[in-house]
Length: 210
Image (tube, rainbow, N blue to C red):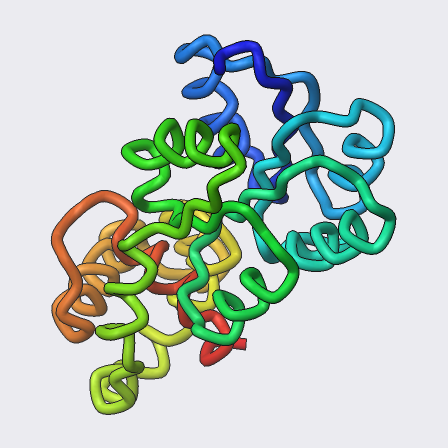
């Protein structure tokens, strides 16, 4: 299974590097990486990997659009989507276009090996975490509306991957004030006190922040 050829694509460089580093450490054969949907599709056409692990939301083409194009052109590469998005419509589209895997980024490290093993045998892998999330992922409008205008501004910058230092500079406030706002947001949204919990929430609900 470790000899399977794999390409990856994600428009977030740090997340892409983290995924690649993990897979390489586990001795998987990564033969290419892209930063957008078009690059991902070109890699699939050129290198014909067994598996393509793609983010859903990317410039040029989404992961789903890449999978749709692969299906239309009878390409054999099996597409796995790895994403922050838990919206049911995306999950259903993934099934519609015969996507072989769908896992959440926050659980990727613990699930990706199982997913690849399953997909390599021709068995689709849809994370149980997705189904659990669909049941409990109703958007809490009251919690969101309890945020102050300043807190909402900070969320909009977090979803753009801005650091606390960058946010402080953009909003002309101190680094400590940004940290205090982040703590207040986490408490109001009732998020877990863990690394990246706020970033994950912001990515999942970015439609409300645009």
